[in-house]
Image 1 (cartoon, rainbow, N blue to C red):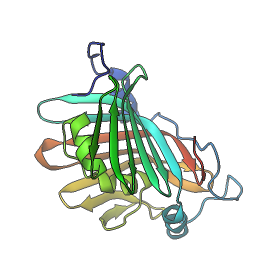
Image 2 (tube, rainbow, N blue to C red):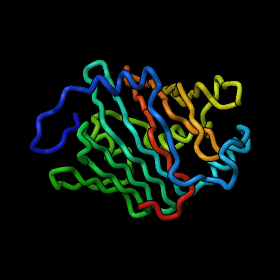
Image 3 (cartoon, rainbow, N blue to C red):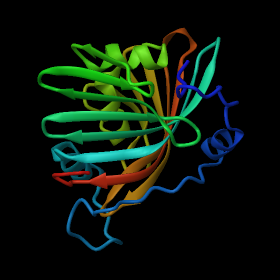
Length: 213
């Protein structure tokens, strides 16, 4: 599985699993996505319109990926810009393990040891890093909590999905948090084929920024 170069693999941190179960990780927004009082939250339909229209956003946090044979905890930062995607993956000590950049020319991977790879799309390079096939094109929509082409099987009292069905994948939204005037996913778990489970605890959102550093 993934690891930083020249360092032995650390045992998966128990802290992340506890936080994922207890839902104590806090989400925050560096810049509010809309100009409204913080105590005013958009209804689900308007919220989905605003989120779907965003061209730039960033989500950071912790992930836990498990299969019947292995499990791994890692940090991540997903940066979405109008003409570029960037996914950074970190070890439990915060060191960069891999960085994938995607633009109209293709996808490029840079590993901690300086090695580079190229591919036509993000999914191919992400599989090289995580050794698991994930629906990379759907991950942004999952993180944003947008139904998109998925089927919303359950919603909460606010009209936001608590369970989405996307092909062989089921995405459970365990917790939301206010970010500016929006309600954004804070804790979600996706279960897929072959016993794959991906948990994401999003600890920071940055929304609607045209040039995210």
